[in-house]
Image (cartoon, rainbow, N blue to C red):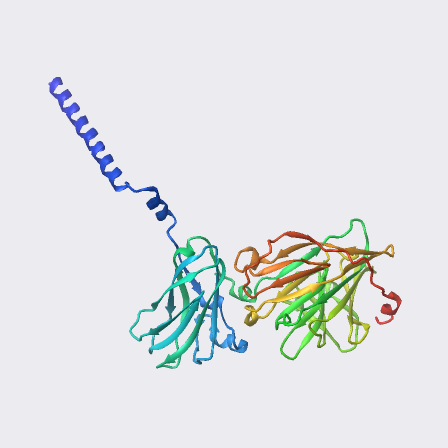
Amino acid sequence: MILNKTKKTLSGISIIILSVFMMGIVFSCKNDKNPDQIAATKIKPLSFEIPAKGNSWVTNNVVLNNRIIRDDGIRNWKDSETRIKTYFKTEKTGKINLMLKLKGIEESSKIRISLGSDTKEITIKKANKKEVSIGEFNISKAGYQTIEIQGLQKDGTVYADIDAFIIEGAATAANVYFIKEDFYFGRRGPSVHLSYELPKEKKITYFYNEINVPEGEDVIGSYYMANGFKDGYFGIQVNSETERRILFSVWSPFDTQDPNEIPDDHKIILLGKGDGVTSGEFGNEGSGGQSYKVYNWKASTTYKFLLKGVPAKNNSTDYTAYFYAPEQGKWNLIASFRRPQASRYLQNLYSFLENFETKTGYISRKANYNNQWIYTSDNEWIELTKAKFTADATARKESRWDYAGGVEGNKFFMKNCGFFSDTTPIDSHFTRKSNGVAPIIDFSKLEALE
């Protein structure tokens, strides 16, 4: 009995061993691929769905953007003259297959689509599915890519209602960048900053700066901020086709987005303002006191900015902004504010460039920041020649890569928007050439303006 059991046990073990051996042979045969085949499997290109609502613009008629680029995608696309461009960034070159994701197809239409150096015309038929294949395009250079669409003919009222563009292929095997969320800020584009290196243990009473916006870079929605400080900012804006402003704002120490919530002992107090200056309160980006003057400043002209910040009575600080217009040949008072709850000199000096209009987020703009100086409580001018370049959350989370800054000769510069590919690394440090000639300013005459 024991012998028979032993034989049965050994027989069972043999069967198990043989089964495992055969499975190994089968598994080995199934994976008998050469290294190139295995590598190809690992780098299979990915498919990406680019939302039209966050990444498309009407580029030949800015005013149509709010009408055609809607919260659910491209809508009301009726005119054959309308050009719509959609942007994304690749790290690789190669082929890309493009598809349209449509809301639905009510009537047939014919459209033209360009990407890279290739252009195709396609008929969207009423019976088509919601995803329509356009074909294969070649990407010859890594960086920002542009899909351009134009309507050719249609049977219905619109050419197509497009929710998204779908891409896949060799060029998508690496990272592909586009706006995936926070579409409002993504469409505005990245904001960029220059933080100036300050001497230690100096009490700074004045901050002087200059801005020159090159011809053609004065785009609607731009804020060229010259004199930023711990408690506010001061610069020039392009508000519309017909209006430009000089803007000076001071934040309240009370943290709120609604100025009506600020307690009386935390309110910004207006001490004085210049001719033609409007003053009031602001919210939605902190709250506080704001002043602006409508002024038709010109591109390719250098404007001067002077900010004063000194301790005042009852644990407060007085901030005063002056603007020099070469057309007038004199300094103008913008406004003077008293900020409670802290008594200090100027701190954290910086400049920035931002776009506050989503409809112009596809247009590049640039400014030169020319000549930075501080004046101290020791009655000395000190030139600022070093700055750190930074960018906002839109850039840091890689929604947009079209930002740059640095030095050109004796000037700092900043540039943003426009989907250019020459990006400056965030947190880069720059040193400009020294000018060596301090501003000549009679402070007693400025004080007489207050």
